Image 1: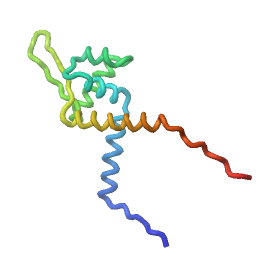
Image 2 (image 1 turned 45 degrees about the horizontal axis):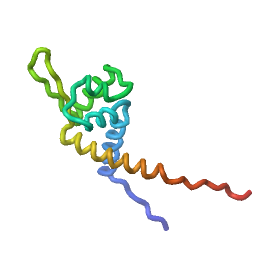
Image 3 (image 1 turned 135 degrees about the vertical axis):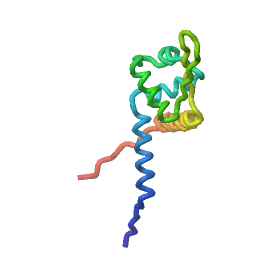
Length: 123
């Protein structure tokens, strides 16, 4: 007799949260923005644009805005003329950067191992 696993609402809700977070992280330019900010903080908009090869100003502004709304990036405006704006990772962003670094280490470690070939069944 096989055991069936009952998935309760709490597990389903957790899966939805994880899925939603993953979808946000895998949007274009999200990971490069987090990485670029992690290299040196704080950073101004044009500094970030120079660090991220190929990103347009529009895409960078959109991604920074989304990450700010999610609490990953902090935006600080200095009352100068012209106004100076700096971006940095929040504690939530710092924690995410660490997790992404570990994920990167995992990906590199496993990409260097040979993948066993799949053998076909005798016919």
